[in-house]
Every structure is written in structure tokens, then in C-alpha cells.
View 1 (cartoon, rainbow, N blue to C red):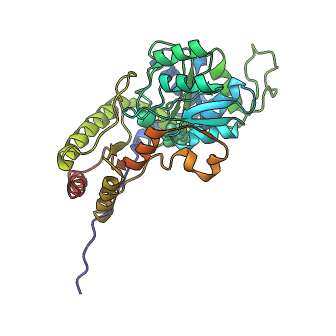
View 2 (cartoon, rainbow, N blue to C red; view 1 turned 30 degrees about the horizontal axis):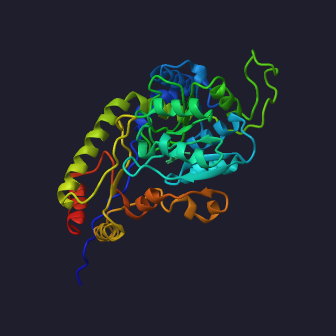
View 3 (cartoon, rainbow, N blue to C red; view 1 turned 120 degrees about the horizontal axis):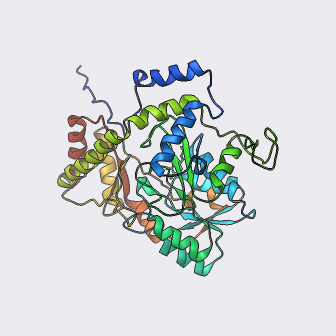
Length: 381
Ligand SMILES: Cc1ncc(COP(=O)(O)O)c(C=O)c1O
């Protein structure tokens, strides 16, 4: 009897992490300093390298353990009334909403723009005309940057704080020369991977410093503050970045430009190949007024309808190619969130959730794997 050898699965993502050799010099420095956490030299070096890139003072930025903790602590530091209504897009990762609920507020789920797949200042403005909103968390969806000038104008017009969940947007989302608050993820799958990690960047006076304090249990470490050094000044958590993670972040930062360039080129090539294979039946996320996506981390195609998506999913499954329905189901359709959210009319998000499909995207993808993806897509065209 002959057994048919199945090809290995094409993975959806493969983390682009520094090698042990690249990490070693940083780990040796850490060990020589005998400093492994608590804002040690490597965390300070990472923060100062990032502060330079954002052209900010070091007090306007802080590392945290991950973006989810970053979101929670920023929301806590904003000191809104308990039960505040926080507007966010229905089409996002669950952490955007769970952070809001865990801090004691209520997510209000808004629609997204049909082309950029993002909550825009115009959508937020029209919601604010009909109901009380206390803060807004736009999401830089799949790393696509927001127009910070437009959000600054929104903040000025409405008086509402805006916090951008830029989890996947390191290197794409900048402050663009205006005021703003950004939260990035440094998870292994993101564009600046540190294993786990987060970064809070804010021009809002005192916000990043408060988040830093809350990430260290709420203990005051500032000799110039009212509370004595070492006393508990707030009800914080433990969300510090360790020196181990900072070591990975620093090693990743050294090659970030080169890798971002390769990711961008790979994404353009894959879109071109898949467009040809599918007879141009797929659509892709459109750049908004915030500028280009500089370091893509995923590849998301939009099919003309739910049936066409199911056909591509099935063809990929048969060809042993992993796919993912990113950000689905929408937040309002998740049981544990449903009761806790206000759900608005979200026709664009609903349509996206019927038709969006994540395809394999990673720098080490081989020509054979690319060919398999194209053949699977072509078989449904
Ligand atoms: C939009 C969004 N927000 C928040 C997060 C959570 O980031 P972290 O894993 O660093 O907590 C993610 C993770 O993928 C995300 O996509």
C-alpha cells in the first residue's frame, strides 16, 4: 500500500525574532549589570532610543509589559468617571474592549470606514452628536496609521481624550508633529518584536509618567513628586518590561529598518501575485490620510462575498495553507462582551467580518509556499 506524503502546512505567521547570537551581547550586558527588571539599563536604553525616534523627552514615553496593560493603565491614568463610555471600532482585537471593561468603563462599538477598515474622526463625530461619549480609542487596524492632525482637531473640538491603539503599527504610526497618545505592542508577531512588550507614547502632560508609576504597583519613584519616594501613590499593577524583553527589543530595533523594508516589499509582491492568480477579485486595505503602512505584519484580503471567502478558505485548507478570520467575530457578537458593550449600527464592520481573510505572511516564506497560496486562490477564481 502506498501512502501519499502530505506537504507540511504553510503557517499563517512566523515570528521574525532576533537569533540567540544577536541577543547574546545584550544578555551579557544585562548579566554583568546584575539588573534584570525594575527599569534597568536596557529598558532605559530602549526607551531613550525610542524617545529619539518619536522626538520626545524620555518622560513622554514608557515601556510596559504588553499593549493590553498599556491600554488599561492609560485608561486608569486618564482618571475618567467610573462607567465612562469609550468609543472604539467594532472591528478590532478583543484586548481593545477588554481593557475598557476591566478598568470599569463601557465600550461603545462604532462602525469603520469601508476602505481603510478604521474608525475615523468623522464617524466618531457623528456618534458624539447622538450620545454622550467620554473618550475615544481608534485602532490603527493591521498597522495602518491614523491621521494624527485630524484626531488632534477632534480632541480640540470635543474636549474628549483620544488614545490610539497602535498595537500593530510601530514604525507606521507617528505623532506626525502634533499632540497625541499612542500605544504599541512589542509582541513576537509585531513589527518591533520583544517577545512580549508594550510602549506608551503621549504628549499629554504627565500621562506617560503616571502610566510608568502604575506599571510599578503605583509606587512613587519621583523625588520631585508630592508623595515620598517608595510610598504607594496609586492603585497600580505590575506591568514593567523586564531587561530580558528589553534585550530582545534592542536587538530587534538594530535591524528594524532593513526588516521593515523587506516586509513592505514582500507584501507588495504577494498582493501582486495573488491579484493575478485570483483575477483581481480581492480588495486590500486602503491607506488613509495618516500615510503609508511601513512595516506590515499580516496579509488580509477581502473577498467579494461570504461564499467566495468560504471557497478560498476551503481551497487553502485542502492545500494545507493556514488562514485566519482576523478580528472575527465582531466584538458585539462575542458573548462575554455583548452584555457589557453598547453596540451601534456597524454595516461596514459587518460586511468586513463576512469577507475578510488573513493569508500567510512572513519574511521566510519560500517560493514554493507562495506558489501554493497562489494556486489555491486561483482554483477558486
Ligand atoms: C489592536 C490590538 N490591540 C491590542 C493588542 C494586544 O497587544 P499585546 O499582545 O501586546 O497585549 C493587539 C494584539 O494583537 C491588537 O491587535
